Length: 285
Image (cartoon, rainbow, N blue to C red; front, side):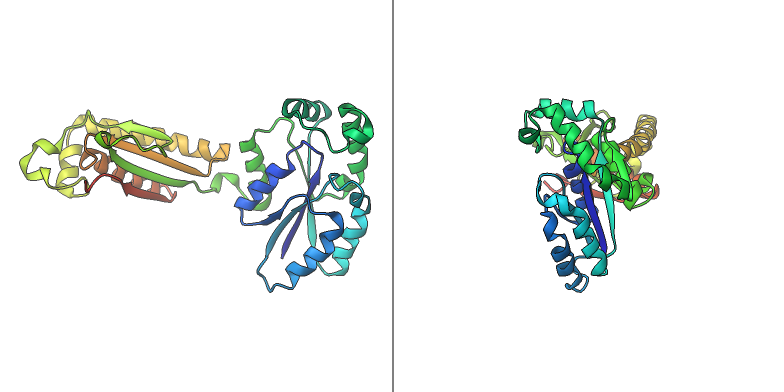
């Protein structure tokens, strides 16, 4: 069982880190009482592999219980539960700024008397846990995407090898834009097989239709530029931490040009080693 304890400074991004780990199939629990750590580990160990990746967030929100964090960690070892600690931190100025922007009180603010003193108190309280941490992430200058990349690097490997869930969708403008699209390409300028009698009843999935479209230089030039753009964009979206991407390609009725272009784009993405689903929303309308 992979047992990860997420802790660190309030306002540093522990819950965000847990959200990313949840996407990596960790079973995550936020704000678990420290005293529950051994019991929860014992429960997971007794479930026969049902919970094989677990991430628990513990911190000073459990003010009294957190004082016994080391006692609870020792009990984990006694149970034979090997664990690792991820410590999430940020610099003092960043944490103060985040709390002022969110207008939420720091967990220690009532005890400390001010936000700044609360942050300083927490730095001191957490110093011992930080020393025992297996991983430390400082989020002071990290976007959410960069935080995701760092967590992937630590718990998956090379973040650049992550896979987007890509959907390439063809559609007809006369039926409306797909609201789920992240980007839309209008191919109504391409030669239209609708005006060729023997092609009108076919779709962009038929070889005759695709050949008709792509035998024109305009179509080939467009595809070359489109594929170059997509090849550039996909790694950028992965680096930024995006998980899903819908690329919509539209023509007038969504039966010929958009279908052929979407099919060619899907094939190109797959050939590059990226999974992609081809959906033809309006082809049969």
